[in-house]
Image 1 (cartoon, protein in one colour):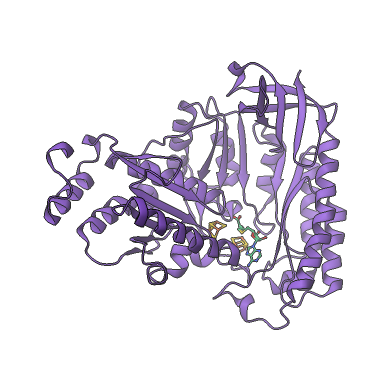
Image 2 (cartoon, rainbow, N blue to C red):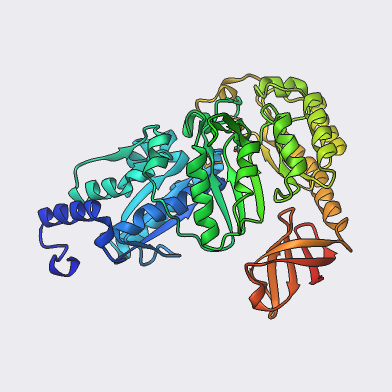
Length: 469
Ligand code: SAH
Ligand code: SF4
Ligand code: F3S
């Protein structure tokens, strides 16, 4: 049908075509190209894949660069000022490309900046045709039709997480052997530094059946490792097949029953919501990888209180002790913020002490970034930039040393590695250890997609080198 309707004939033809495309998704072949650029966390990676799934039935094939794209989607992150500002510089480049090469190209801003700034984005960057928040991407076909109808501002920022998940295509189009699967979205914790409760909305858990169906579909496509994701994934709760309320632990055990799925991970955990039932599963479920991301943010009880984290350092320490008792080989990763308002040198030293005492195999550490609309933004005693910088450098020196030590402790050990693809050098393969460390070793390409044993011979801060065991 596209061949008989030249697109530039007149505006009403456009309307008709867009409406037909939206109404009859399955009759269109892939004739258009979409470029999706992803910023931010794992959930945005998941969301970008799902946006591609939503667009495939209406004729869009994904491409790796914006050059040939008919539609560009920026899936954005609002977590720190720098992340949010990146979007506008990218939009500047896209505008130039559009004006010079592809005037008919459409531009969408999705994700957390879209939710936080809404119509303001179009005012600041008129190149943008659509703005859609994280709970609205199932509406993309409708929105694209509207843009083609030129019916004014196209903006969707409603929170309807359930409707979104119910409307997504039942099958996913995945590449590779490891996939993210959103089980819970949104956050009710309201840490005083964080925008996520405002950009993702309230905590919502997806039904068990929907998750299991999606996991089975992934397994059928060759996925071997699934990471169950949620902003506050430990808060997962939904009705299980037996009618009782299931938490994350039961869900993990159930996903572990799926043939083909050999590795399970989950992220991100909150120290407040990690209960004994989940710790028991961490201790007992062999498919669960011995690697846990459990952010504390600060080691100072005063700062934890000001952050509204609702737990103390002692609580965290005891929790880690329980988890290590249940699964002695577990490696930990954490998030840290330095320079939260009111943080003194003594508070910062508590964070250093926490890192010394706990010991992390990997970590993410940030300077506090003031986010508009959060309680932290209006707190007194903001910490000067040079102090934040100095603390970040000191903290990272310690964290990086621990990371390298952890990797070096693996020398001589045999680890299971999920082979993701070819390595940098000829004959080399690349995969991930149970601790997510990138691992290189020599081997035949037939091993790609398999889980193999690798004996570690060399270790740097960020990667391992070994031989097939
Ligand atoms: N629970 C969440 C955390 C999301 S944000 C999750 O699902 O991943 C990831 C990390 O960014 C946080 O743990 C925190 O360390 C950091 N972060 C969040 N807001 C920040 C801010 N305003 N300034 C600096 N770092 C921040
Ligand atoms: Fe943000 Fe805190 Fe919720 Fe994590 S738990 S998403 S840091 S508010
Ligand atoms: Fe960023 Fe939104 Fe994720 S703010 S970290 S993309 S939840």
